[in-house]
Amino acid sequence: MRRLGFKGGRILDPSSGIGHFLGCMPADIAMRSSITAVELDELAGRVLRALYAPAGVDVRIQGLEAATLADGSFDLVVSNVPFGNYQVSDGRNRPYSRFSIHNWFVGKALDLVRPGGLVCLITSAWFLDQRDESARAHAASQADLVSAIRLPQGAFMRLASTDVQSDIVVLRRRRPGEDASMEWIDLDFVPDELRHPRCQDKYMQFNAWYAANPRNVLGLIDKVTRGYTPVPTAVLDGDLGAALQQAAGLIPSGVHVPLPVVCSTERSGDYGRRTRRRTPGQPRAARRAHPHRTAG
Image: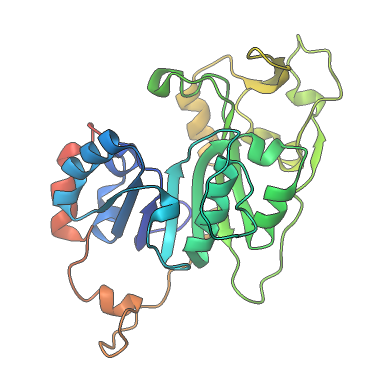
């Protein structure tokens, strides 16, 4: 987040779990932020509330589709979103309402973030790799792909006991008048330099952005099956932590531009007014939140 230029603001974690992302948030960013965390699961939400509500985090134990959150009201949406081939019944008839749940979260996050704000998600690789480009096209109509990192098979095995192929995706919602960048909508063939030596399939496809930015793929691409049809999957023979640190250095710097602070107290609800008083995540609350850092 620091590399992207984000130093604080209104933050939303729309699928917070017990608060792993909150626990790992740098203290200086937490001190300058107002944080909202949403979690559907009752037990996880109660743990989340016990850990972070005393520190001033606005914890909502409900589905994101039911949360009362104003569109365009956040500077940053950051989360590890649910994956699955099922839909969310949000009752709002938005263009993304028919998408699978991980793509629904992308669409919803882009609604909630302000123009110029960032959406940083861990999501299913199918968002970028699915042959049906509808979800990407919808996202690209509002936002640019700042960067992405293709995580290798087993990246979350120890933490979440899942072997699903996933990406870190960073999107920036465009401001009025900015030109759109659409090259990440299409698919392309996996280049030879990224194909695993044991894989003989020269016609595997993945997102064209990765074909143009192969250093953002952690490992080499092989055909891997998880009980279904084999799919192109990143396989890393090496240290994941070191590979992640190297890939993080490829993320563009200074992308986030903060809103100017409006000092007038006469404009109800604006950003400037909120920063004049202690809001969730400001200095005193942040210092209380971080004793729970390891608990996440």
